[in-house]
Image (cartoon, rainbow, N blue to C red):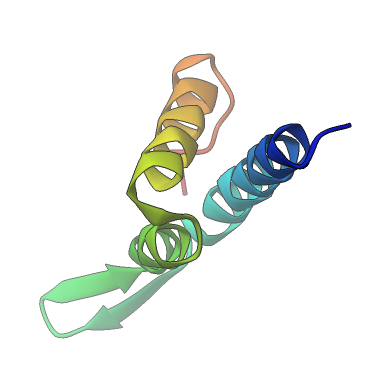
Length: 76
């Protein structure tokens, strides 16, 4: 297996794991005054930091597609 193919598979696996982390952290919220801070925001920033712009966007789209497919990831 070439190095480029191995790197792509690794990034896709990390993308799937980060989408799962988003599913777990999104319902968690910390109420501070009139605005609450959610774990989803933390997960988005963490994903963008770890994976970069392109793969971070792919991870967020995977999370949204999972929600649109019917899994209850958007509900509290």
